[in-house]
Image (cartoon, rainbow, N blue to C red; front, side):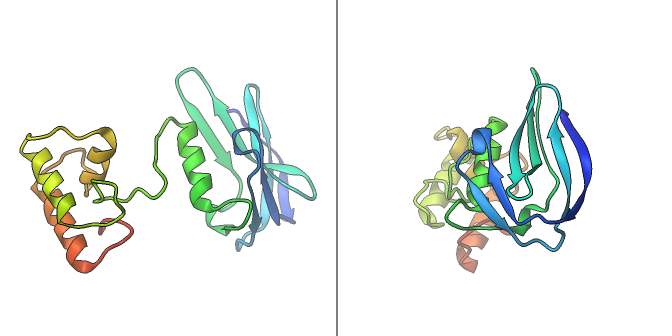
Length: 173
């Protein structure tokens, strides 16, 4: 995977800084575990995240011909959103590295992309299910409420349930 562990961690992870495709991003770290192993990129890999002081790698990315990997030695939830970036932004950039196009703010059920789950989304899903209109890739992702790669009546039921329960962020589990 192009990732090498070079040293056991010590209790000194505090500021995570981005490099390469994460250049310009940074986060304070306040996770429960700050005994973080030190990572080094193997052949063809790059350091994408490091501790500021003392300086050592905590995230490595590798891009081979037929696969890509990212490895980190810290808990993602321990990063604190701030002026240098948010966890949402970090995740979006990492997903982009894998070729996964994610529009910031996309939520399951918001098929028309207006930020609101409502009857207009239900109408679009019904039209997709009946074959009246063909969804774009983004619309198909948003319409597939149960993530089974199908757009069917189960997705409509989940979407209506999300609307009636006042969900704003995501589909119910």
